Image 1 (tube, one colour):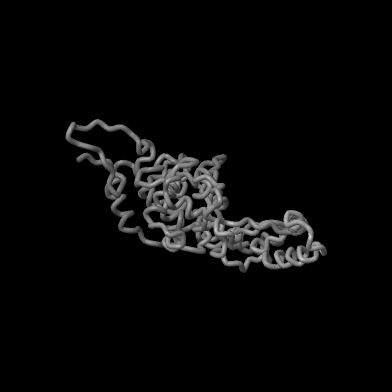
Image 2 (cartoon, rainbow, N blue to C red):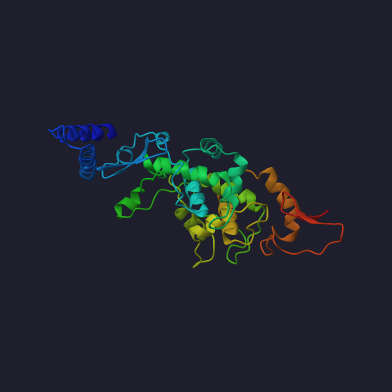
Length: 322
């Protein structure tokens, strides 16, 4: 493309050469400049050159990269482009990409050339620009920008077909992505006091695994969570995102997402007749006498201890001193 424009320019310049050899060099150069300007002004292309004088991005009305989904993202150089997304926005892009199932977290870390620990640290941070010094921020942004320039749309989760009864009534409710739990009732549901025997980290693992199932979206999952709470209670996608971004056995224990998700997955376990895990049995052994896992006192609770002791949390979410 760029070469064809130059050929056209060269042809027009040749035709514009003055017939009389007596004309000055300055006049010739002026004519050359005007022809070049006119040619590029009439063209649909604008070529931005990098420091080596080679085009690295082509923009204009004929953006072949954007119109051709088969373009290779690696063909686009975004090193000199300013990052136009905040850390929070990039985190959201990463989560949506991982939720789609196109790559696993480890594969994505390799694709953007960062260590898995670096990616995990970035995902657990909160705040508009929290994590801007983490290499994940710039590398992930570049990954998604190159895909955008190559015309690769953000992956969409598979939609399920409506049930027969819904289709007859003209509705469009997607088919259920899990076993029917409508007939299962847990003690304490009416008063939102179901005893919990999972840590926040364990519930987050279950949420992440569930969200990659075909047909499941964050919005639909939020509706399923709200159904586990007293009538009139809603759960927003931001609440779900905030809970998923935390890290630690007690981080997020006062969130309604934690409580509702535990109830949902416990019903699902019963519906699928799955046995209790080793972690679940350990949690029951310690927390059952106390009425379940603590969802009242947040992880930033203050404790009084001896001068030579410090409080810490173990894998069961117990606060110990040592």
